Image 1 (cartoon, rainbow, N blue to C red):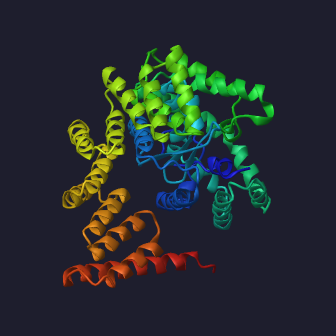
Image 2: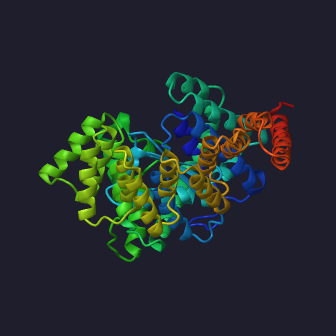
Image 3: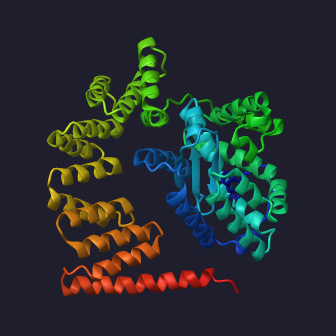
Length: 478
């Protein structure tokens, strides 16, 4: 059993019980409080971001998933917590919830969804696992020592995900009984997540049939390939009873036909164009367009442009952007791609013009913001880039990418103290306290900066050293 199989069993989080289902238990809420869930989730996410090679560090893919997830969680006012959605490059059909509201989605599942409502159905199911505190309920059956053991094994399996033998060995170290205990509860939890997920889909304005249609298709796939069933079926047991229950719920919901969003189509094309050999991706999209075998010409042309960019065929990518403009594709993803093409062709002035005009329409779009700052730095507009990054950090101080761009701007200006200070804040936000401390120590030795700036560095360094010491104490065995 790999890391995701285990973690997918560790699904948690406020009340709101599904209609017709019993209250499955409240005792665990004192055993695993929200702050502990969040700390556990943050720790696992830190390892994923730093060590998981399949983690998709793409601001546009993450923005789409989080926009879709926010729409769904807003339809659950009882949720009472924040969520963060992220993607992993993995062809298997799977999704999983982590402690603290972190929800991962495999790229294979996004590509397999035939509509946005189907993808929303899976996400709403995972959100329901979180809002119903399924992990907390499961942990309520364990004592503190067992819970600590579970977390240690989860981290071990994460580190060994690329080595199935190591993963299997980790699972054999006394956790097998715990796995079976969790599986004993999973079917009730799945039914509860289905029912709440369908309610959420309906409230959010999606086609509620999307959840059932996607699960039914996976069930058929699982029967055809019994020994290689989709990962989602292994971690989320699917039964005829579950399918029937979903269908009965759907019959009670109002019928609505829902069009896919533009960004759903573009994100799927971007993921498809970004995997494997770029030449194969170019051939695939060119064939779709030539034979007119596509669900969306816009999405096919966008995918072709992304694949051509990977091939460094910038003129060809530019031609596809022109076609996207002709199709009147209204998405910041197209604006970002258009500017990237112009940057790759060396036309920084035109790239900056595209960024500025697009940000008037999409002021909070992160990809456009980061791209504009990078283009300004490349064009020698260092002071302007620094000013833009600093202003945006006042609005979103917890954005690590902006701290990184600010550090890059300071470096270009030769301000070493401020460069290391900004880089330290990036590492803090990523949970890398040792690296952050090292950056502040470099800032102390930088040889520039005034008395006030050095005092700020000294104070921050004392704070981070104290925090690191406290974390080390908590990790010590007693």
